[in-house]
Image (spheres, chains in turn green, blue):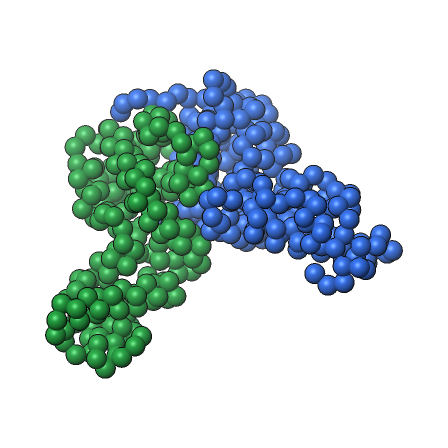
Length: 205
Length: 205
């Protein structure tokens, strides 16, 4: 990616710093897309961007921070989720759903989120960066808040409902679902989501 | 697509017929992908395949039949769904879920279905052939079986749960969900699906 020798030197100005950040993000996006989340290393991204690995850490922190920066998500699930899930667990599904739908209903955020979802769904299952990079950052704080004996399983069933709702309403934009008022969606979906939070499996109908 | 003049003549042999069917399916796939379901016409497919429109109808029936043939689905939702949904509506979610998961758990069918899902999810929302061509063939017989006042809405919420489950378990292959025994998945998801079938929305948690 252009003049690696120049990029290898420490930044001399604001402008140089912005160039380097951009080069790192471009290299990161290419690597996450081609090698997946697990196959991407900070060292490999640094090499592709023509900078020192320490600079990648300096600008972006850990690999998961670099991944979130590359996705340009409008918020960080690691800080938002614990806040939303704090408080009464028996009504947590309503709060989570309102927060997520309010975010996706906002046009600019939706544009970015749908693009991320679409790219992630098209990636091969063997090295899907959406599953390996983003989902754990969402499911871990969720599982931490859910009752045993198997909170990870509960969190994954929550994911089945949330993924399907987001795909149907925003990615596929099925009508009339895509145009339903948010509170109507919440009233239908929240009780089901809540059952995954705090309910039990049921062998027969 | 090669020698339209020859393809324009009526079939002279089994071999010619097979060639024509293949040419029609190829043209149909290209059109559904490029123009979407609504933008595809039998006449346009016939023209691209170098055959008469009557021959497309003769081989494949209506546009929705041609679409299903182009997808190479392992079964026809228009015949399977009414059968599965016949009988006690209060346990229909368990039957539907078992039928769908048994199908997707079968490796050869899954390969084809995941390919269809992946291509559909990557298509633009404006003219998504999965949404406009396939989903109505699934949601119409479902809505027909569900109670009022708004069975179409119920069917779409059923879709949110089913799409999310299929994406999470088979397209993204999130573990351990992807490896859970089928009956464990059914026991978690069926009561929620059943609520969309016969339950009610709930304003607050």
